[in-house]
Image (cartoon, rainbow, N blue to C red; front, side, top):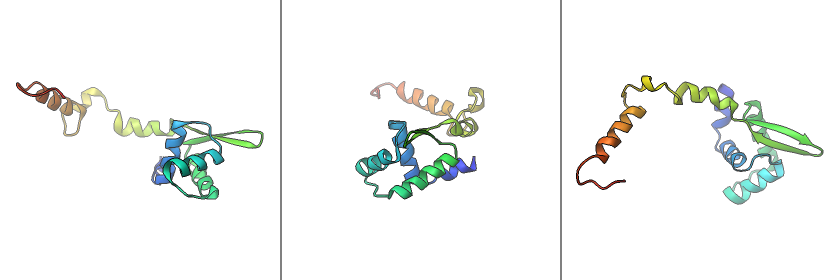
Length: 120
């Protein structure tokens, strides 16, 4: 999991993952072009290639070679332990603790059911 957090720590790598989420299966050239046009990132191909290597080492990006081209695909499997550890808690564990989904739902329900209040 440390490799995943290291990979996600860099904003450029997160932007690369955003681009692969938007359009999976891109070449290095396509990724560089999209980062430059959509995000104004002027990183060199070598720098983006190094970022992709870190993402690949963390398992967040997988590659497939077809002839001269290397296509990059996002792999969300390494994120599952993070989701299980911190984001997916059993419903009975929420217990109304601060920040829990149960408490937020109760506050919203109380607020929405107040007389004279506009619905949001």
